[in-house]
Image (cartoon, one colour):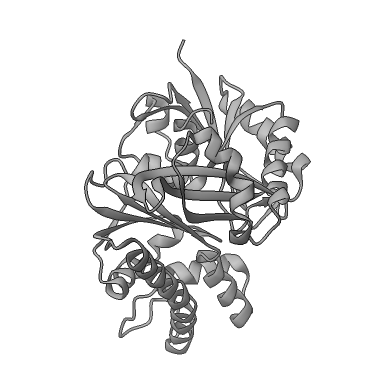
Length: 354
């Protein structure tokens, strides 16, 4: 029997889990997938606030999906995770990791003792004092990670790894995006937008932006005194597409008001993405050649065109099923959030134990 790993994606409103067989092999063979809603407040901005509530949801998820393994990999990727460029003297990876607490305090907004540190090597290069390793420093607030691990253990699960959500997305989406050149994977979620730039298939730059589609929904709800469900509906109806005539069911004034709010809030995120890609180009001496756009908020009408116009980089939509093999039973049951909803959980499981 092959290895079975379950990736767990704990979102603000939903927990998603995917069971992948033989994660060390190329491609992901997904045999089981399930998602379950969380009570409001159990998770906020990516942080588990109520471990017992999340643990109860995980127990129900296992009972419903019939996962055959309790070995799980958890994902981290909110505003409490920092990813920075770092170049260090060449040495074995375990020694680089041991040296991080003594090298990176000035790069962190929290004390080293309160962070979990890791290093992802990207390339070797020759420095003035000898061989160097260029890579990514990953720092996560310890308390945030431990809360997720605690919830999994309370549910009777065995956490065998914690992985960065941007790496999980890259693992699934980037292999088919083109093996050469620089590709930016941009995933626009509810509260977080992730940018990964891969050069010749290797992630070399990561940014996690604390903004997403929920910002637009909340702005509409607050300014127009609407329930969030209605605000979300109007956001999806209007998007960033200006038309001569208001959509059916909306007055011209209401349409123009909604359009102005959506444009105002979304323009901040779009500007941030343009600036992020400009920063990458200036600091890496490399221009992004194409953008792979994913995430539920990235499907807002007009968003891909606006991103392409502002960045002057071609934008195409990522296919969450490319490179994934689904069990026959899963092929007939698309998740409520679409196939893209499972991408993070599949990517986490595909990395195996870390």
